[in-house]
Image 1: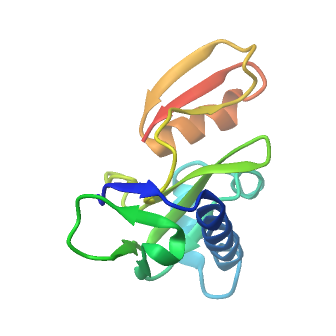
Image 2 (image 1 turned 60 degrees about the horizontal axis):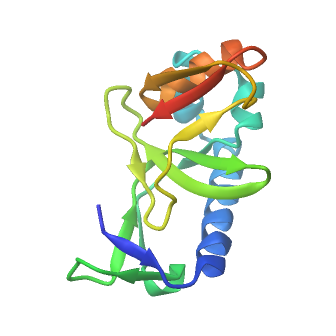
Length: 156
């Protein structure tokens, strides 16, 4: 992963929101049965997927660090790749803090989009008991099932 600093946090939020919005719309567009089937096989209900604003990035996309408000630290290039996969935006109180992309392979690893906040993903009411889970889809399944009574911390 590229080691980056946010040079322009507002620009990053703008670009990340646009990417998340396009990805979410793409998931529910035509000819995207494969990611929908994948999410169904992960035991995620369509309504929950929509509530979590999950999306689909069909093709890997190269992006310029500068145009995303990023400043590279330890890299030789000035671009990064948004890989193909399921897009998971981490949104807290209507603010996008981070974005992960998970391949259409349950055993694959989630990719954290450069510029995303490096903090634990915590879903649910802060007053509920906290349970930590490894894996993005394990955490989403648990939160879907227990969101009224449990707070879930996901380690992607």
